[in-house]
Image 1 (cartoon, rainbow, N blue to C red):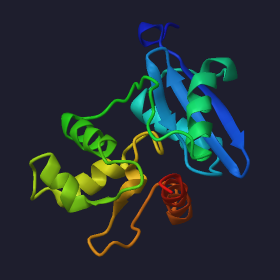
Image 2: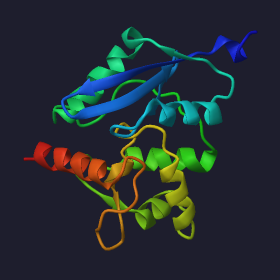
Image 3: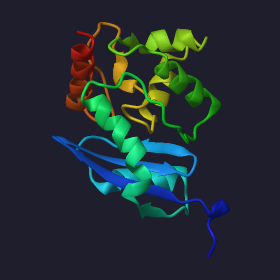
Length: 174
């Protein structure tokens, strides 16, 4: 049985200090960064939804460049990612994810800010939904989104992970 264009999703589990994250990539680039300490099911459910019928193959060697950049980020040594991405989403999601990628390291924006940046000021809830669908935690920095009052709000990785990522960035600005 052949798969769509012989596509394969390669994955590995990044274990670095207290961080345990599943990473996945296609031949085109990084396509998934998982939540802290979540089981493999987070990746497999996502893959079955976004890439139905495409096999998941463990291959740490292929993921090394992606792991290296995530580790550098977690160490406070990397402020932006240079690896290629392979993200699937609607044009609206892509616009939101692109706007997230423009938020400077160590800074935050609100959902309303993102809605205004993409020129859809009335689409704040839809922006929130698109942010929640971001498959590239850390690399596409949805952790830099806060509530209008500056408080931490929902995050697929959980508020502890979000807080930890923002702390890394605060320390990186010193």
